[in-house]
Amino acid sequence: MNKKLIKFLMLMAYCIPYGYLAINGDATSGTMIFYGFMIAGFGILCGTAIRTNNTIILIIGTY
Image 1 (cartoon, rainbow, N blue to C red):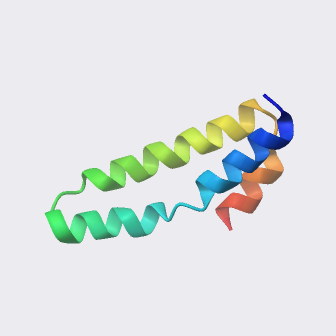
Image 2 (cartoon, rainbow, N blue to C red; image 1 turned 60 degrees about the vertical axis):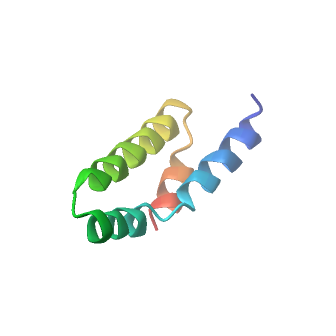
């Protein structure tokens, strides 16, 4: 894949409000499983950024 496309897709994935979805899922269903999804999603994004040597995306995405 094109390196610019990978960067764009990673930034788009960081736009998903994982924290909001986790808190909303916890409040509506009473289970904490959505926090696990949040941690897994963040871990996958960080791992992908490190493997593809796009650490600037990692820094931009976390702020």
